[in-house]
Amino acid sequence: MVRNLSPIVEHKGKVREGKGFSKAELIAVELTLGRAKSLGLPVDQKRGSSHDENVEALKEFIKGAKDLDIKVSKPKMKTGKTHVGRAYRGRTSAGQKVKGLRKARGLQKVKGSRKIKGNQGIKSSRKN
Image 1: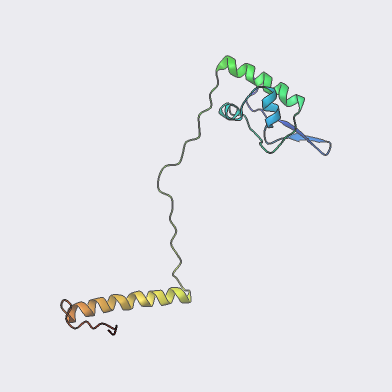
Image 2: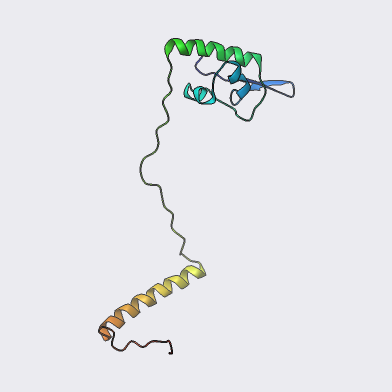
């Protein structure tokens, strides 16, 4: 039984190694797409052609797979936090303006809390 199974594809008269087995080849061997993927077979869903060599290779593979009862495990998912990027607030004009605003707001909070207690002295800019 061949473990690294790859299909043969013809393109413009040249024979080369393909990306995966076509749907027509899998149907000829009575395999579903899900079962083929669970066996670890490469599947090319875009390709529609069917080649006899590929069908024969699949039949041999399935005979060996049934004897050994092959099951391919799913790839493990990465765990952990993903990196969250921050907006660049460096040496751009917009970044400098924001930096200045933040400093000014911070200074106003400190000065305001020392001078005024509670709501005394706060004037509304709205006119009734």
